Length: 241
Image (tube, rainbow, N blue to C red; front, side, top):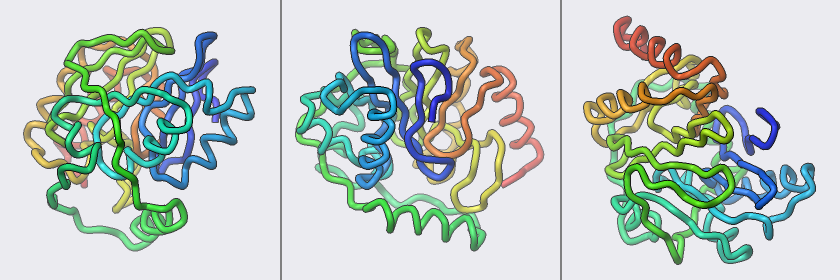
């Protein structure tokens, strides 16, 4: 799905990955689940590209539903995979994610999330080679993304900011659709390992002046960062889950 010229989403409101496309190639942000590679190839074909055009795969964090097809595409295309130093061990399969607190689920959204995993091969492969990036580091790849550390969901959660595409890719630093309750709208992401730290980290988004906020789960937000943060704060004040 084209969001804006050169900016694409692979997947849907349940699980999503993103593409930045320019004359130098393609950058993939997050890798969903392994089965989404089919949708990646379809989206690339629609814009006259292939996996050989992929220069980089950026992970916002190393949970299974973001690592997804990264290793398969890395091996096939030679693309470099980037994530934070704190999440490298998890991305390479040398560390397991801990269990986190779960909100009370609702039946239909939970079934949809489970079904998505079953139909898109939820068994993500460890990534054989991962390059660590530091907070504030900018990469010379399509979209010229810059890493912004937002620890809390995982110890090394990142947002990736691209002024070229007027966008920030937030992974699970926040969500616009809760995968277990189905509630739509900007809100704190579920399953954070350190909920307090995750909330504090979102303050860093207030420094950004971009239009598009692109989450790993939920609809694309196109009304700018200030309004999004205001809606998250209103959700917290109302105690909405």
